Picture 1 (tube, rainbow, N blue to C red):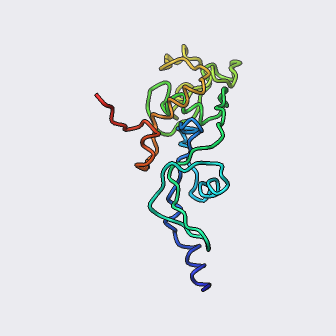
Picture 2: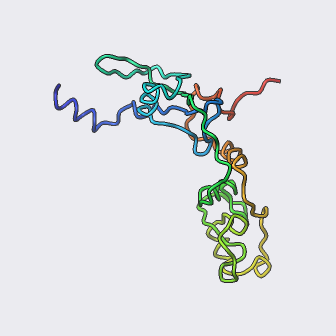
Picture 3: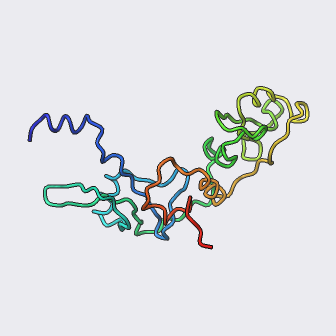
Length: 194
């Protein structure tokens, strides 16, 4: 094999890297909506080869080995059911998802940080019930004072979310790219029958 071919293949942006596979649980629901459960095409092909998934839909593009040709999977279903987590990890991302990526004081979207409703300086703890998403200006305005001292109000009281609530919130934020073969398994932009 020509060494230039290998070098060019590795260095050039291969179109094949742009073919993610939507991963569905054994019940045909996505493992997660936000971020959407996607695998690189290589992982989907490997899982299919190892009989860990069933291929439900394919891209038109194919990949070759010396003895095999396979269409790149666009939707795969796990053969074994993965039980969804009941508890939600307290992470910055999950906090922002709970608050729908909006400042809980003014409602703006954009660059967010988090704020302790009861400031740590006043004994407030870092928990689901005391931390909210906040934009920089509101966080600065509130500082280490109470809501009463600043006259600020929360859009909704902070609570520990259920896993299902975060999944539902995730549906509100579809990724920029949704392949047409995924639409039957997602419910974004699906036309409803009257």
